[in-house]
Amino acid sequence: MAEIKYEIIETVGTLSKSPKGWTKELNLISWNGRDPKYDLRDWAPDREKMGKGVTLTKEEVLTLKELLHTFV
Image (tube, rainbow, N blue to C red; front, side, top):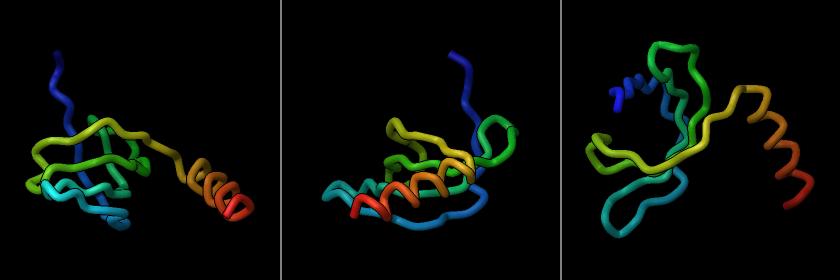
């Protein structure tokens, strides 16, 4: 399996923290040197491990914001 490289450009915020110290975070991340995207996933305390997540473009984040605003 190829190594996945990432650079956290900006930490937007933390949504929650588990008893084991993992945090669910929204970050702006560049994956494998590509343009940064917004990324929502769980991270280990040292950020050496990560859970499955979802990446979104800025346009998708804005659409999600509108959808959540009408839902909540």
